[in-house]
Image (cartoon, rainbow, N blue to C red; front, side):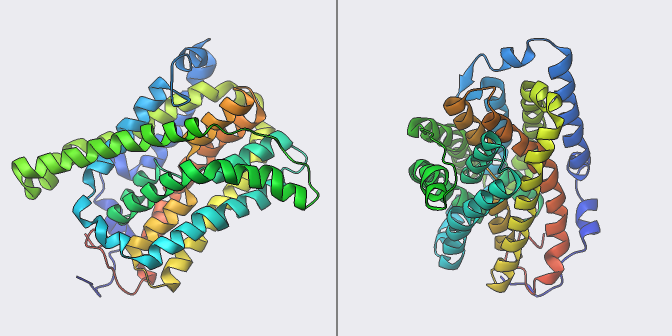
Length: 363
C-alpha cells in the first residue's frame, strides 16, 4: 500500500538502531586500523592469510564475506521478487547505469587522474567493471531500501558479470583506447575466475538464505521467522563485514602504508566515482518516480563495486604485488566508509520523495 505520510526524521530512525548499527562508521574505521596494525606487527600474517584461497580470495576473507551476506539474504521475501521483475523501469535503468554509464565513467576518471600511472589506471578500470554482489546488501538494508529489488538487481548483475566482464575488459583496455589513440593494455581474463567468484560469493549465501526462509516459514510461520529468528542472525551480517575488513587490510597493509601517495592518487577518482554515481542514481530514480525504497536499491547497486572479484582478477592476471592489485585493494578503503556515510545521506533524502512505496522504508 502506498503511504503519503511524510518520512520519519533521520534522527528518529538512527535512534532506533542498535549500538552496532548506529556507530558502524566508527567500528569500520577501527577495523581498518586494526587490520593495518596487525599486518605491520605480525610478520608473515599476510602470507598466511593468503596461503589458502577460494575463488581467488583468501579463505578467511571468503568466510567473512559469506557470513556477511547470509543474514541479509535470509531476510529477502523471495515470493515477492516477481513484482520487482515486472518493474521494467527499474530493470532497464539499472542495466544502463551498471553496464553502460558506470564503467564508462570509471574509464574517463581513470584516464583523467591516472594517465601517467598505467598499472593503477588499469586496476581502476577493472574495479569499474566489477559490479557489486556482496556489500550492497548491507548498505541497502541500513538505508531501508527494497530488499527484494536489491536481490533481483544483484542476481542480474551476476549473470551479466559472467558473460560481459571479459568482453568489457577487452573493450575498455584495448579497443576503446586504440580508437582514441591512447596506450592499450593486454589482459586475459579467466571466465572461470569470474564465474567461480559469482557462484561462491552470491550462489552459496543466496541458496542458504532462500532455504532458511522457506523452511523456517514452513515450520514456524512468517511471524516467528521475522520477529524471532531474523533478529538473532541479523547482527552477524555486520560482524562478518567487520571481520572481512580487518583481514583485508591485514593482508594488504604493507602495500597501503608503504605507498601513501599512490593510495591518495588512486583514492581521488574513486571518491568522485562513488559520490557522482550514487547522487546521479538517486536523482534518476526520483525523476522516474520509482519511490524511495527502489531508488535507494538502484543507487547503492550502481555505486558499489565487487572488490572481491576485482582483486581476484587483478592478482590472477597481473600478480599479487602489482599496481593493478593495489588499485583493487584501495577500492574498499574508500568504498566502505564512504558508503556508510551515504546511508545517512539516503535516509536524509527520504523527505524529497513524495511517497514511500515500500512498507520496509516506512517502518
